[in-house]
Image (tube, rainbow, N blue to C red; front, side, top):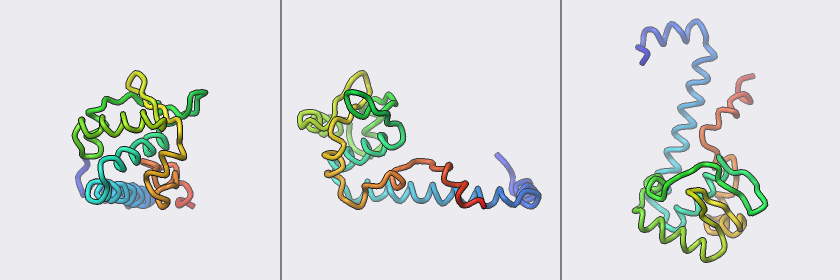
Length: 144
């Protein structure tokens, strides 16, 4: 924890920190708005598809089998991330697996049909920049 007077001293000495703080706060607000949209407007099946694509954007690696999300996650944690019950998440994941969109293996997800999964989420959500979490790497383009 840093107290306000110390933060003000640091910002005065290093004004670029204020730009970085502003960027990080705006990124968190953007992510919070997306989560609110997921929770308020999307059904469970679409939430699951969106989260799979978000995880792919942030942790995906291309393999011979498809696009593996290189992050182990339990179905309970997965469901908690999008505010649905584990049973609803499991049902949607099995539906996607039966439909040939994904495969589940050792707490990993492998996206077999990336285009098919994207088609479930709508055309306006198809950019990886929109799905990128904590995209501080983008900060440098604003720091000139």
